[in-house]
Every structure is written in C-alpha cells, then in structure tokens.
Length: 246
Figure 1 (cartoon, rainbow, N blue to C red):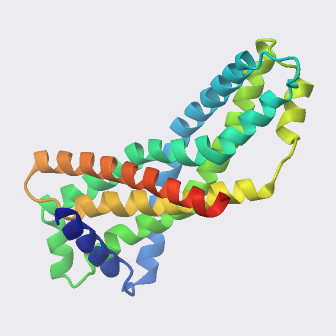
Figure 2 (figure 1 turned 60 degrees about the vertical axis):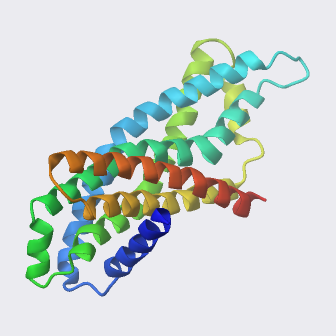
C-alpha cells in the first residue's frame, strides 16, 4: 500500500508541475540555466565513460572472435550496435541517475527543509512547477545530445583501441560500423533517452520536494532519488525495448 501511496502522490505532483506557468519569461531563464547545470556539466563524465566503454567492447569482441568463419569487421559492427542500442542510452542514463538525480533531489530537498519552498507558496507561486518543470524540460532536451555524443565517442574509443592494439585494421573497423546500419536504431535509442530523462528528473524531484526534517533527511532523499529513478529506468527500458524492437 505504501507503494500505491507514493505513486499517487507522485502523479499528484506531476499535475501541479504541468499547470499553466505564471510567467513564461522566468521559465525560459530557468530552462537555459538547467541545460547548463544538468546537461553541459555532465558532458565530461559522459565523454570519459563512453570512450573507455567503446574501447573495452572492441577489445572483448576481438578476443571472443576465434573462428576464421567470422569476418573481423564484425568487431566494428558489434561495437556500434552495442553502443547505439543499449550502452549509450541505458548505461549513460543510469550514470546520469547518480549525477543529475542526486543534484536535483538534494537541491529541492534543501530548499524544502530551509522553508524556501514554503516561501514560494506564500508568494502565490506554484513551487512545484517553478522548481521542477524547467529541470524536466531541460533534461528531455539536452540528454539526447549527450547520448549522441556518447555513441560517437564510444565508436571512436573502439576504433582507437582496435587499431592501436593491432586487433583490427582501420579499414575493417570502419567497414564494420558502416555495415547494416539502420537509422531506426538511433531513433529508438533517442526515444528511450527522452523517457529516461523525464523519469530521472521527475522521480528525483519528487523525493526532494517531499523531504521532511534536516540535513540527514536531505541526504536520504538524494539517495532515494538515485535508487528509485535507476530502478524505474531499468524497468522502463525493458518495456520500451519490447514495444519498440519486438
């Protein structure tokens, strides 16, 4: 029953979030600020993880192909497919659950326990919409760009690892990443990313918005936001994969 209680309160919060904003100019400024805070600030860690992820995928694939019947360009093909279909949209989104989710939950949670949220309500401002809506919209806008960057850097990291180690030639790898390419795979990954962005920001904001107590509770809210948004991303990934690829 506790799960149903939290789910109902989460839906109620979303209704407050998506009400008509008071002043669109204020929301536009917040939207631009959140793009920098949630998206651009995460570009560094996304880039590092993606390059090494692609490199490891290439090396593992090369060492697992021990049959002369399997062409070497399969290494490039498998690296591209793994990065585009699953590693970039899902693994990077889980990384962003920790990076972005904890930031959102702790930021809003701190505002709640220091009564800044109550002050917004006293001034007649829809605090849920003002604090959460720009974050949701900014994440849904910027996360697909981070995922596309992750795809490109992952494939590049695989190329560097494969060619420098002598496991595959540059021509063979590039031929592999060009083989059997479907644009639908990219759209599938970006569609998942938009849904994941909504989940990460809204679930984390929910835990921060209803924080009660002091600094310890803010930390607990941050942890809960990361944990539950990660679980929701994994569960949603299974459903979307079944719907979009079946």
